Amino acid sequence: MALKHTILAGAAALGAAAIAALPAHADGIPASYKDIAPPPPLWTGFYVGAHLGGGWTDIDLGRNHYDYWRDADNFTRYDYNGGLSGSGIFGGLTLGYNWQFGQCCNYVYGIELDIGGWRDDASKTFYIDDDRGGLDPNASTRVRFTSKGGFYGDITGRLGYAAGNTLIYAKGGFAWLNNSVRAGILRENGNAYNYDWSSTTDNGNTLAGWTVGGGLEYKWNYNWSVKAEYLYFNFGEPNVGGACCYTYPGETFSRYRADFKDIGDLTANSFKLGVNYAVFTPPAPLK
Image (cartoon, rainbow, N blue to C red; front, side, top):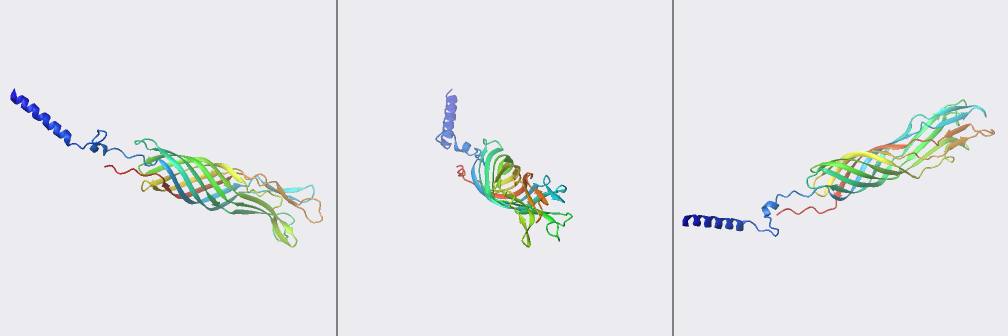
């Protein structure tokens, strides 16, 4: 009996010594267990950045027409074929915020704002033959359309899947572009022939539309990331105005009438590269 009590007392003493040897912690959880806690979400937080890319624009002109009047009662109609296409560069600043829910989840939600400038100068001239040889006896009648980009922006929602420090995402939302679209007919001005824009509206107002696309973003640390992104834009219809006419000297009816009022949507395909900086403090290393 004495031996049994001695063995039990010895075991209890060894157990108490082992517990006392474990690292103490304020909340009662040994530090060795806390060291294996998962890190916080990598993508959650506010970020700022910059981007630069190229775009290809197009405006459908096929719904407009041009009339040449042989006399006061008879005319020939010419339809504009094709569109007004251009290419250029754009760039600016990016602001956004991401949410990555929980420490176990790979889905990232976010909202993003892009603002900047879009440089895209495009022009197209239609040469129209008639029995008078056009306004210039040595050339065809000319009708010209031009388009020039300006300030642009978009506000989009993002939804992505994060595989560690790589994020694959889709996005879409509201977009706008300050753009100038003009149309004119070549007419005589003294001994010269110049384009007359006086009967058209210079659409220097802001067009509002939508955008959709997606991209790939990679973080090389908690704060810095790079991305590649494709976006399709539809900015809506430019309002160019009515028609432009020309009357030969000594005649009482218009020889040429150019219709400009029915222009299609201004659309764009774009590709850009960007860099973002996440404005939050990375977690301290576990001890």
